[in-house]
Image (cartoon, rainbow, N blue to C red; front, side, top):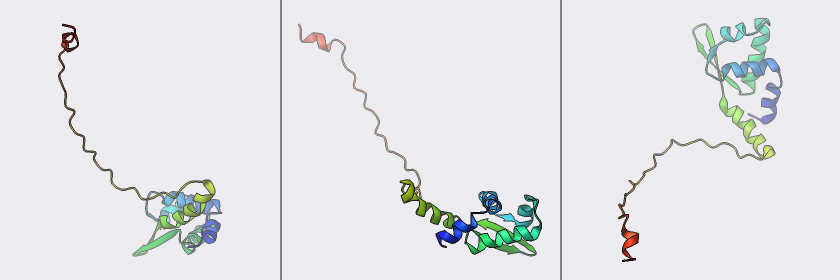
Length: 119
């Protein structure tokens, strides 16, 4: 997966729309075709370009082909852009840890203590 091939694949508006459709998970090819007014071979070609660039992967189930987004390829672009934008690449977040809080010890003070020194 090279930045050039990924950037070239994302250079087309239809392919970017396909990537956006796949961001929430795997979709069958028929569902992707329904989102466009183009002929099926045109969309198939766009899917092939995305697959060649490593942006999508396929899974066959009988006669159906399911497409899913390869987020690692998008990470390649993000890592390339990060130094240019002045941001560090995002590291995987670990599970949040619970903070152990010590119970606050309530000390009772005598309200007349400050006056005892005067007597």
